[in-house]
Image (tube, rainbow, N blue to C red; front, side, top):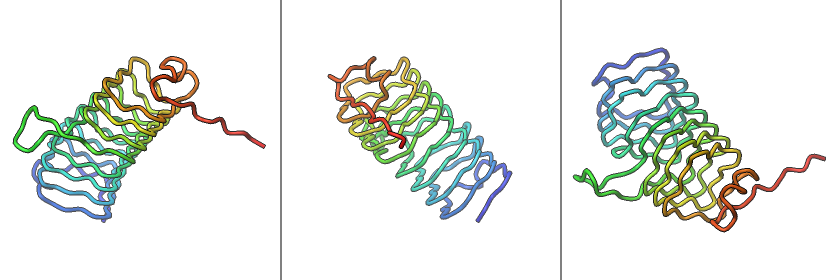
Length: 197
């Protein structure tokens, strides 16, 4: 099913299940996505501003060039999603235990793609980011708190003002400039240059 140039009403998608759907230039502003699940869906150039996420699932979804800024993801499950060129400014990526407003639990974002995404000002708290791809992403002023960044790829990412607080950093890939700024003593490694023949 394909939805194009559609502005969804507040409760139109509440509790719905979508599989293999394509959403193009759709507006989810203020839409209630409580108990809504999306599997293998593509959201191309969509706007999720002020959408209400509550027990919402995104599994193997892609968000190319969509706007997902200023969203708090504590009630969202994200599995193997692709946020290539997605604008995710000032998002809070954390999970809370059921019935709690403060007690956090691990948020598994391993294998997610954030390549070329704008994540400036975002907060990743207690996130599993093993093998996550942040190549060429804007990570300016991003906070990674108690995250596992083992073998994550931050090659050519803008890490100006980025903070890594109590993170597991092992074989995490950086480009030369970033590597010099953070040093190899913290578990970062240099991306090996590609040789053209």
